[in-house]
Length: 159
Image (cartoon, rainbow, N blue to C red):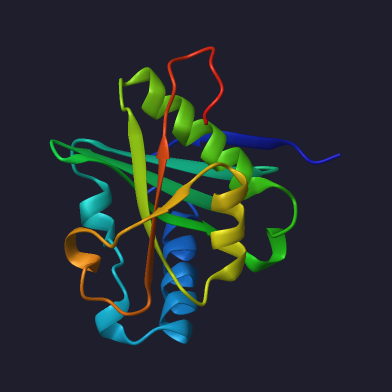
């Protein structure tokens, strides 16, 4: 039986660089450079950014970042390694990220994904994320799909 952990970590922790590179390669295989909105590792180190890492038996196999600014919160860099897909790691990462956001007083989480990322869109829809108009830097991106989850207070289920 494998030991799965989800924890807040530095984006420079062991194994994270490989996940970042794999996620970038995946996005670049689907979308042109001008429609890839990938945060570099330096941006993941800034105040207001929480990086969640999924490890299986100590090996980093998934990650997600919550970026909180004055204008709201955004989910960035959700990625699970190919070999680990289908194990529920993305859902567990989102559970941790959403709970952290609630605890921090965040009332909603927005995200952008691409229109060819059908598995991601399906996951977000199943979790209660609603489609919203493109926002911010994604406004003019034809491939961008933007979504939002309105968070409820602790102890209440999201809508």
